[in-house]
Length: 442
Ligand code: SAH
Ligand code: SF4
Ligand code: F3S
Picture 1 (cartoon, rainbow, N blue to C red):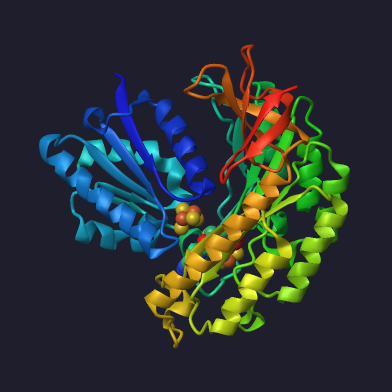
Picture 2 (cartoon, rainbow, N blue to C red):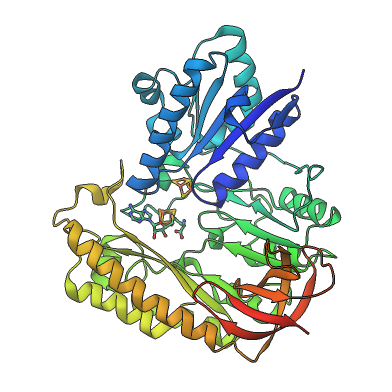
């Protein structure tokens, strides 16, 4: 009998990918996705805990399902992802209406947990995090729709223990996935019409060092192998740790044509004192040197970053150093956040917490300057012809389409003929605004 599944996903691409996997596994047990929670037999909330705000979003969303369960008593509520891992059984104590609590390493067991809950009606907790975990082979089912771009998980967990970060505790030890399994998944996707693949992990630059990467292959070797799949048009990856960015990887940007000219290189802070207290293991000089070398290999490369403002002990001068990095690098985009204390993360116990008003003011100043730079970089594209991968039609007006450049910028453009997503074409850039470029098809 068909059952209905409703999923809500917060957080990073790892969670998005995990949600796809869970949906497919439940699909193999007759579950079909619905976009109406009130019709669902099973609700899965895949949570994120990266900052206080993200965790609060999850908790408030559980409250909504509590209400729904009052009128739909047979509904099964499963909480997965990083809040589930972090809180474990404590979540059930606080919110007894939750039926299943499951961490990121247990996603492959979701169908059996749901079946067990149906049989026994007893809440279940699956939050084991083993350093010996092997990421199973998995071939995505693209039968429902064939999006032109997909993510492939190449590693899980993180061993870097940046002092602000919860991820090493919620995702466990760094584990690389088997090289041949990744290639098999990529080949399968491209065979089904996928044009763009993004290899994802918390720190892809250290691929192959730990876990089931028995073949001892490096990340650059993996990139070259995936790039060699016939029919793949674009290859991307995220996220990278600056300390592990090797010359060998930089060279890939000069040598692999399908590798997109975009590098997300989180800097976090421009101050060496703060970087050290964050346990980032690089100096700002080393970081800037790598950014410059990347541009030597690929002059059109778009650099983006993550920045934390108001880390404990951050002075005006420390923050000034971060502003200076933004001036020097000229990022195409930056995700910036106010520091927030996280459970288990060392910095939660650091003295000299920065006042909320100071964090707010610094963040606003940083974001305002970064927006000016991003806009100026977009304006510099006007008059150029760029290669765009079609994403789809705009809702209105007619004959308007949307796509992305290799540097991952959104381009809206006009074209009279019908296009298909994943198609590559050339667009002449005619205008720029904060979040997108505008142009016409050549
Ligand atoms: N593994 C990835 C991404 C980690 S999470 C990487 O290292 O690049 C994404 C971003 O969230 C981080 O880069 C950092 O800028 C931010 N972040 C993580 N923990 C945070 C915290 N406690 N407070 C504020 N921002 C945080
Ligand atoms: Fe968190 Fe640092 Fe690991 Fe990124 S590298 S996930 S910021 S601990
Ligand atoms: Fe959030 Fe966990 Fe990803 S904390 S950012 S969902 S690894």
